[in-house]
Image (cartoon, rainbow, N blue to C red; front, side, top):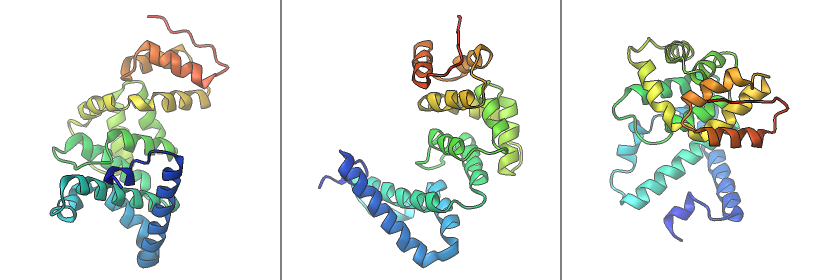
Length: 220
């Protein structure tokens, strides 16, 4: 079996098999770690720079990447089954690390962390997401630090602006977020068009997919 197929299934059957294997592995981890599972899995998932060098030091490059991918999948499965109580706080700290550190390690990258923040959004992260979508980088930095409960970083706003370019894949999810809160209108879409790394064609196509009842007219 080609090693990459272990973490990149070629069809639905392989995808389901991978999911089942990750669930079984996560269950074994839970039996060993008990109540500490979610916190340990979150630390493992969000800080690859701390474990990848020592875990994968003596493995060949293809095997190393597959091993790292499998470990991350099992850790993420543990988190999905029982997220730690401070999961959003941990995610926001990872975002700050990605914006500020010179060597933050591999996955999860900025876009993946943003996807998870969107999935677990609550009242804490709403101001942060709103500020990002409108391009208010200073407000986004202040909100992110507030959720992460860390000290303000002088260049964090600039780092957020730079990394926001990695989030093109989240365009549909962000627009749905505005639609769900009845804010999908020209006033909201103009900043999105300016800040998201997606052109007018992509934005209009996404709006068609959403099929919102709100009529949106975007003029250049």
